[in-house]
Length: 129
Length: 129
Image 1: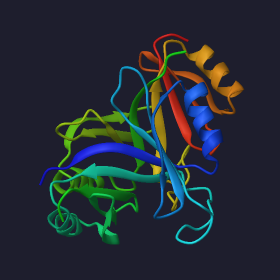
Image 2: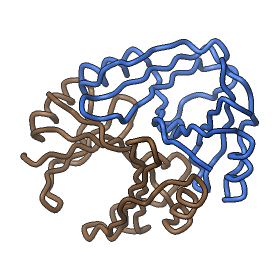
Image 3: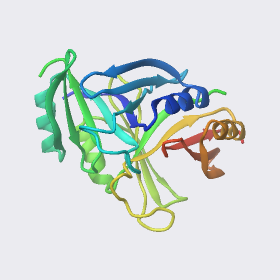
């Protein structure tokens, strides 16, 4: 089972403020900023020179799927790519994870979410179910 | 001001359980595991094949500096290397950060912590103050 750690996603309350902080403050480069039609939210991906580590800023509308931001919501999820979704899910559940969002399609990809034993949300993405 | 994003640190309640999950479960490779004499805690760094993204597991004793783990403590900090600490701190404070731990030495390095405008802890490390 091959997982590839892709980025860390943090949740922000104000996308403009957060982007300003991480670009003008921390000096990160904005790689991509996209709206997510499925949630009405927005995602921005940033990186620094000399590092491939990606930081993803996640903003959600304060309605529908997502409850209000509160202290402790800072970490949104860790993201891993896997070759196929169902096998990876089954494997992680055996290892103590719990499924929090069953597999669904978003764009051309399959996604699912699990919680690790500490409650950390992990996103799994795959081209194949 | 040059920042280099180095890793994401998450806080775990049981280091053995977390290491088992991220190695046997997620298939990450343990790069390093060290005890931190200053806190009595422990740190493990992991990575996956095909990615330079580093995940750091942080475990702290449930006494002294660190309050009990509660939901919302999952994200420990984002870590950035900077050339010199004081300038970076001053710069980030101007950008809306607040200093949570003033500069201190650990091993051969200078460290400091700030909170970003969303409350996310950011570690700054530098060889020079």
